[in-house]
Length: 271
Image 1 (cartoon, rainbow, N blue to C red):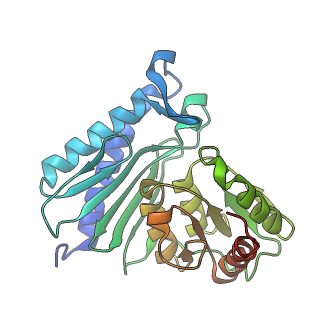
Image 2 (image 1 turned 30 degrees about the vertical axis):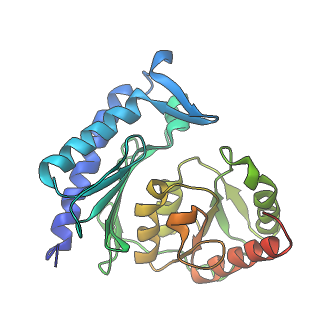
């Protein structure tokens, strides 16, 4: 067994996420124009993203030099065979960060074999810490958390993300949005997928759906939802969400209804 004491390793993942957050916060509401650039349309990167990622990577290299890494800004680094892979978003919610909107997080998932087995999401503004280890449950600021008990989509509070960087999904997304909108109590789009997932795991939101996310957006948060008793699938109902980037999750009944809406639209010929 690679990690005989999962809670001890999870403490180390948390410590490294906090190192990333410490590197971010000197830039909070202090970014200069020249410290902001656009990787592609509607996809920003800042000096803060790089500072956080560099700090996280240095910490991993020091403690776990044989481990592999998949990080948003620097891409892949190969580790030794059969070693874990760290999946890192050093600043999820970069657009929020740039505009001074206090909703962003550091997200780290650790994949062991085929599964993400450890996940930490840390929001340094609200000092909110979410963490999970596979088979050991999920917690929010040290207290066990669970998904909501809402039995279906009727009256649910749903969170989502708009496909600003993937316009090819827009028609399909809007059709699913309409199906969900007609039954849900309200929808929110806060702009940080990791926190959408964390808030779904702790029952603030009843469910979440989005298209075309990246593995670093999903790795830690999807584990949180699963360990909090929720369901997570891709839009076809399978487990390929890390590969496709398309995800639906929530309590059993809410997930079922969101997935049914997605399947209805996809079956109608929307791409």
